[in-house]
Amino acid sequence: MILLDGPYVSDFLKDTIEKNKIQVVKTDFSTSVLKDKNVNFISENDAIEIFRTNPDPLLYTNSENSISWIERNLSFSDLPKKINYFKDKVKFRELLKPIFPDFFFQKVSFDKIDDFDITNCRFPFILKPAVGFFSIGVYRVDFADEWPKTVANIKAEIYQTRNDYPPEVVNAAELIIEQLIEGEEYAFDCYFNKNGKPVLFGVLHHVFSSGKDVSDRIYSSSKEIILNLKDKIEAFLLKISELADLKNMPLHIEIRVGMDGVIRPIEVNPLRFGGLCTTADLTWFSYGFNPYLYFFNQQKPNWFKILENKDDLIYSLILLDNNSGIAADEIKLFDYEKILADFQNPLHLRKVDFNILHIFGFLFTETKKDNIKELSDILYSDLRKYIIIK
Image 1 (cartoon, rainbow, N blue to C red):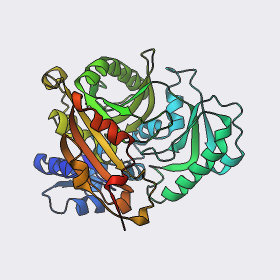
Image 2: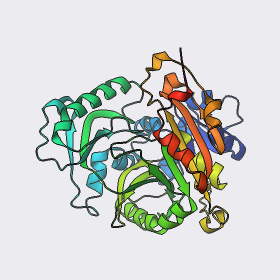
Image 3: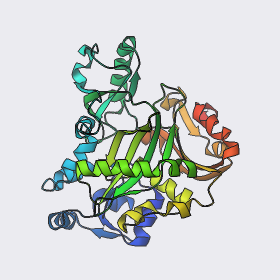
Image 4: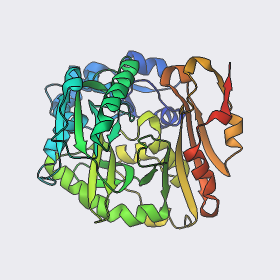
């Protein structure tokens, strides 16, 4: 079954639900967002009863906002505990201690952040909410003299966004300081089947514009990236499964791979793929298979066949965030046609309401390797050329 919640459900996911008669938990949100679809709804009470009689039912959520429903209605199951292994970043680091015993992390209360003594912290480190989403409130600190400015910045950002997400999704009451994980960053969707075995749905390279950049502007996938990391990631996922006893669980995971080749996890997001229906939809547009259906049908992609004719191609997810420095109330429009013209083969443009999500949208692209400049251009762009002022 699927448990839908805001702030966004893609047309692709809606069509997948309708065409394949996937059960959807009937809530006010799901009935509203699927009002024009012929949907196989299941009542909330029936959904709860399924969990009472089946220890590991297939459940997918498009949004972490759904976690509050799970905590209210499924507290008798072990699902809230397993979600909290990953959603609470402090508990996540504690879970991984058997694999990474020397990893430095420390919890700090938001209301005591001004008085926190960083003397014993290991530089460089990352400061972020213990419960977070979408790079909200994530800051890198290289030196002690950066701390006062970092504290001011995170407080301002948390105050600005505190009403945008429920506390189960973003909760800055507690922050975590953790050592910087060096290496190239990657993200991927996967699920654990009924036997606890991992199934990988591709790998995306998270590209940054600088060492200080913590934004989500570009994630890129290719045949080379997937085949180079597939076996290593699957071995890592087996260790996660052993620690958390995961079955029938979809996940979106962010990792870094160091110079030593070791995979070190940044975070694991339970019960969903990439936020705002991004990475799973990109997989469809890029590689032609539907991760939502593969999860519900317990299928595994044949990557060697899928990648046969993909040697010279890069598939990218581009976040059109407002890094222009232009205040939101000064922006009239975003010129989507202009940005489409700057790409060789745009696969899909997803417009969103800037006033609600504080981004302009997402762009999925196919780029030939000899035209990679289009990706570097958008990586470093402040998007001002596409913004129309009031």
